[in-house]
Image (cartoon, rainbow, N blue to C red; front, side, top):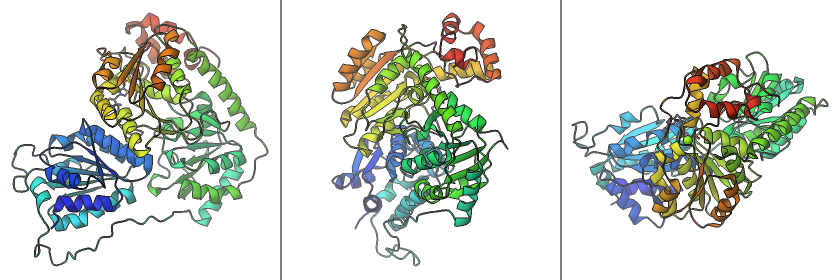
Length: 587
Ligand SMILES: Cc1ncc(C[n+]2csc(CCOP(=O)(O)OP(=O)(O)O)c2C)c(N)n1
Ligand SMILES: [Mg+2]
């Protein structure tokens, strides 16, 4: 007779789960055994930290649209999941998290590793259940899979370790629990908006004179339709960070990213538009949207709950982006006045020239823009790019041009440090054979440094650019700009990341001068297997929004006199592009 763990793993297999990211422990020994027995049908991917496993499950789900599954033992193992699971919750990724618990009759007795993970995950998990036996698992395993996929949220199953070993027993089933009443698949309906709502949206968009489009992750896969809408509406496409791969970065219809790590023409398009079409995005920074009342807005989102989340929209189109745009586009009139788009395109040319200036600097210490650009220029069209949370995110967003066919991923709404590497590793399983690249900060990379050995173990074609500024740099500028305070608590103890990579069986390079870049990258890009390229970069290179609000600029000046490295910072902000961003130069 199968036991609870067998039923769980068989159900995952029936639901087409190919990978389980996790780390063993005595709270999940029976599940590990069930996985071992089925290792030709489902792969257990061993991580070095359960947080990474949860990030990998989240990322895998985001990369593929399929279930991401992670497994951790009772107590500390499950507790380590939390950040990764919140990443899935906030970015709406379908994840099934499985945790062990103590023996069922010792729960809540302060026994070893007695953490009530069901209670601990109450907020992060949309579906959250404590499995009481094999008959119960028959129901809950499929329901967890279906819940995660249908709601695009985290489903959590906690199973006491002895319960995992219990076999299905005749006579133990309750009267009402008929066997085999759960299907092993889920049914996905296509969602399209009503005819009336489409007509309403058409009226708004056709009436607009300066239409901007904000496209996010929900627009992935709708590039053709998005371009169709933008062409008809004469509308520049602003890409929220998670929508970076929606269109190639040098596409004439896009003005790049928005927000602290965005571009000036994207910000100006938001500031000047009279109509906004949001496609598959809930980019969280409300202050970067048009002012309330400034623009009439239409939003397309698969999730009705998220329509109107950031901006008061008049027409809400609940549906898949591609299907909805296909209904919308034939009804849109082609705008004869193209000036709004043309101005945005001219602004984008100026912006890109300005970026190229900063990327051309011969300064030592190396400018992070220069090495990021050089790294990015070598990416093939089918590259997968991940980044972390920090100034490195801004550098990857602004200075790497993704081509048609690339994919991009990062912890979005959670914006968690230490996501870049697990996202990259998950890409290795989601897209076997494709080259993977990651731009991370020294702070975030150090948090889960040991996970690099997972990339080595599974021989993933991964190249990690570590921007070593020995600083939690984004926070330096936030403390200054947001608060008017000098940096405090942001310096990092330097780590030799090239040596660390070698110590883990990978390949490590270090670069600290512009004249070394080509040779180092040439070698790194032909090297097989996981590679770390440590770039020692200027710790005093500010991270700025495309245009400093007056309040930020004032705070910045207030904080500067007491900030370590103030002379170097002053030198840096006197140069482009920071001069323009500070409002002291012209783009
Ligand atoms: C887990 C986590 N802790 C703290 C933060 C706040 N935070 C955001 S960016 C950042 C600095 C990251 O430093 P590093 O990885 O070195 O990147 P850099 O900004 O220097 O490129 C911090 C501390 C966060 N986003 N996530
Ligand atoms: Mg750093």
